[in-house]
Amino acid sequence: MDRTKALALVSSLLIFSNVPFAVAAGPLSGMPPVINADNIYSQAAAGMLSPTIASFPSYIYVPNTISNSVSVIDPKTMKVIGVHKVPREPQHVVPSWDLKTLWVNSDLGNALTPINPATGKFGKPVSINDPYNLYFTPDGKYAVVMSEAARKIVFRDPHTMEIKREISSQCRGVNHADWSADGTTFVVSCEFSGELLLVDTAKMKILKKQEIPKNFALGNMANHNGMANKGPMPQDVKLSPDGKTFYIADMMSDGIWEMPAPWGPLKFLKTGRGAHGLYVNRDSKTMLITNRNEGSISVLRLSDRKIIAKWKIPGGGSPDMGGMSIDGKIFWVSGRYNGVVYAISTINGQLLKEIKVGSGPHGLAVYPQPGRYSLGHTGIFR
Image (tube, rainbow, N blue to C red; front, top):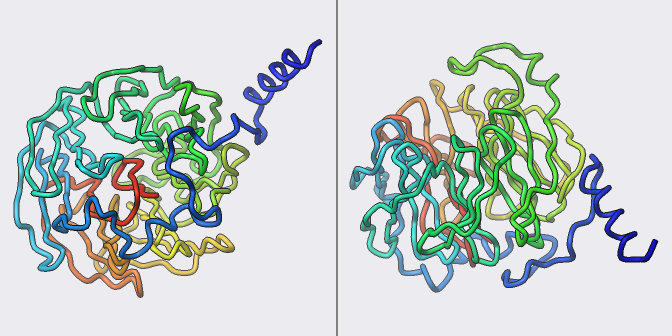
């Protein structure tokens, strides 16, 4: 057997095994260089606004899934200053790769509504099938639409949203994602089938799939806000600052999974009932985990992967998705079942303000935020 065939055979064996493996040598062509290999978020630290957006007004954009609207909050006054109607069931407000546009994802309305963050003005919706969530490849070449109901991952032009390639997700509930440090692959969560996918960025191809262990979720049969617990339900995905570990929130297992990057076996860490969103703080030393179904936020120290605090919302709540203030001192997060947005101090976990918005607030965006480019969702900046 010649060397080329031998390498091909080894590669195929690695792809279909359940052990960590090496993928194509990175970084992804066209991706902005990693400045600090020990901290991929070094360019998204407190106050590091790109010149592109430094003059943009600071607002909190809140998609209300049931009200079919977006509430706009002024973070200085902590008051709603506007409400805008959008197509049915807006799920997330997503910053574009080039930082110049915010996209409102209306999955049941089959539309992406652009917002000009320089002016706060809403544009004409673009017709898109089933845009539950939206991401961008690290090179800015593609928008990646997670079509949850259609069970597809759709690669589109990041500006016109023209389809370039679509692939079957091979799972149910394709949802959240994050990229490896070198940008060559990304991990996707499938919430309804309890699975994870590894996708090749350049080839736009699924490389691997694995099921999340069921024993953790099935051992806890308590209802989660009316949702029967039938097994793992992976949600948000986030890469550690050193690029060595992926964290996956699991709403029905009540905690997070740790997985070696880019792929490998899973290890469980309990955080709280309904673990949902993952947010690395501006100093990259801790990560916040929203426990939606118990009204709390767990603080994970990333150096030793220990939960060092749990902040409970007074009177209960449903913290879901959010983002950090520019200086990192306030965590803005939607209260999914309470029709509010919480402003929480990242210093001591104190609830600073509870702001009434529409019904079913979900993936809010704090904008502008520090960083050179956006990978999408409610704001993954590097």
